[in-house]
Image (cartoon, rainbow, N blue to C red; front, top):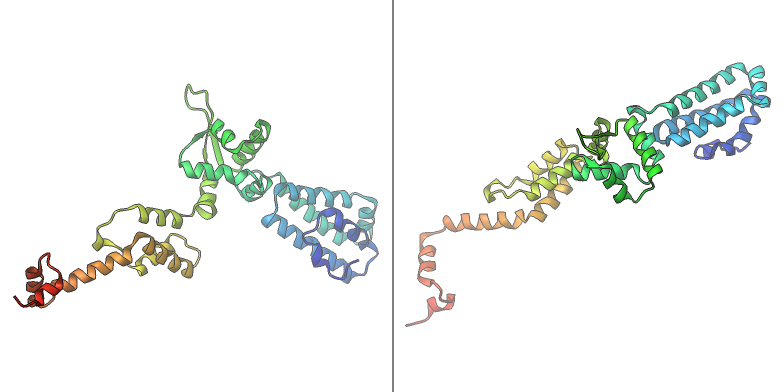
Length: 278
């Protein structure tokens, strides 16, 4: 048995199966180490694993538990056998689920196209024909059907056919909208785009501090990111130079009247002309 079992957390089940087969003859401390490995693998898969990976782990663990070695484990260490059975049950239940709780694992089961479907729908911000998705993704019909079915079961998308329509339309479901809001097109990105598109009068330009607060309230992941984004937006909009122009105009309006008179006398002549002797 390897001295460091943590290196097996990310391995496939076939790699750890020989380790499991040694357990019935091991002392209790070693049993706990292997159980801890299975627990860590289960937690990792439930948090970040694709549904296919979760299913593979569940099937592999059940196969071992029903083997001759598994039956020996049940006879020698029944409590341990019960704990491992609970891991297998938990993984099996998770792999069977196709509701909102399984959304992330379902997306990971379609790593190439799952999120791209959500991106297309978020980009259009409206329902789009199924044929458009197939054309944009350049995907086989059988693959598209299976993927859209899985996404719909988790409420990531909704499919429907309009009255008297022949084309199936696809739009974001409630869970899909939440996924877009969290990780695909967050509201703070939308806010930055809206600010840059608007044509506000110069006196309405928000301060950098106000921009920072706006981004933080819209879910920007950190204060530092919000400040950096506020600075970038201000520079992209040219607000800094516009403020400088406003400040210069304000200073000119409050200058000594003598300078205003000189500017009037100057007109279009170069500044040197004011000091030439007639």
